[in-house]
Length: 167
Figure 1 (tube, rainbow, N blue to C red):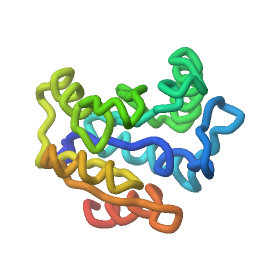
Figure 2 (figure 1 turned 135 degrees about the vertical axis):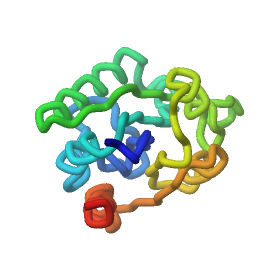
Figure 3 (figure 1 turned 30 degrees about the vertical axis):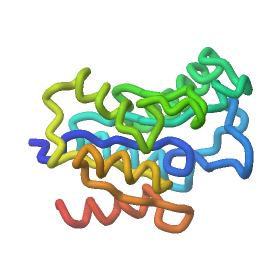
């Protein structure tokens, strides 16, 4: 029985290593954060669903296309699947931050869309894991439990703590 409902994950800096001053634009540049694959595999057993909410303004800047992003995400979900992890859906915002869209975090548009797609989401038992203040702000705006990770306090470390609490 799942008491944990939905896990919202940011991508860059949470699932994969964030590149310095540039964007991950293809699978060759996509490097999983240490322990992330195993962590997502474990989290897939704990949460009813795992959703990714990621700002991808490289599309808006013309650095990559939506097709490029879809290929990258296919690679990522395939690697996650090899360890029996699952990502139920990926939401991304292609807009530039100057466009003031509703979907770019810290705005909650992607989370609102997820709740429209999965109306049974129980926000009290859902988490948003991100590495930036805008991730945490978006999660807080939607009353999700938020956790900020970084290169030291990673998704893998948070997962280990979570497992120790619920087992």
